[in-house]
Length: 119
Image (cartoon, rainbow, N blue to C red; front, side, top):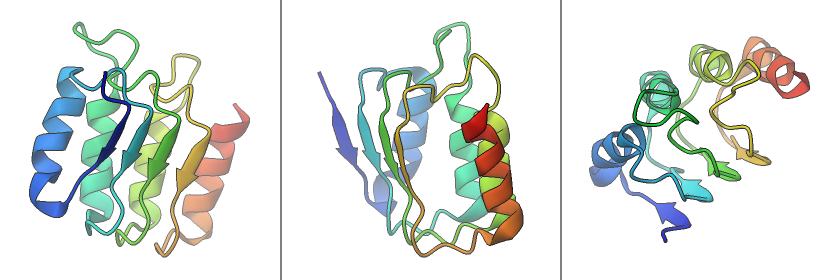
């Protein structure tokens, strides 16, 4: 069982495909820091996390820690990610740690995320 994954920029596309396929459904920790994924990359990850026929609980139902430090993520990216995590059947229901250090989230991005975390 794979419980931790740290990926480098060269492996990022493969990682997103694995997430979307449900191949990482036992993953507890995902570290994507220092990959410069930006808003587009975080939006792609958010889409990959959504429940599908193959992954009705979402692609990472056990994920507890997600590290996205130093990724040039802005308000648009974190807002898209927050929208993907809304609702009772949130794809990251077990998430207890989200690391976003050194990104340009802005007040709108923080507000979007804080609303989700209270839901």
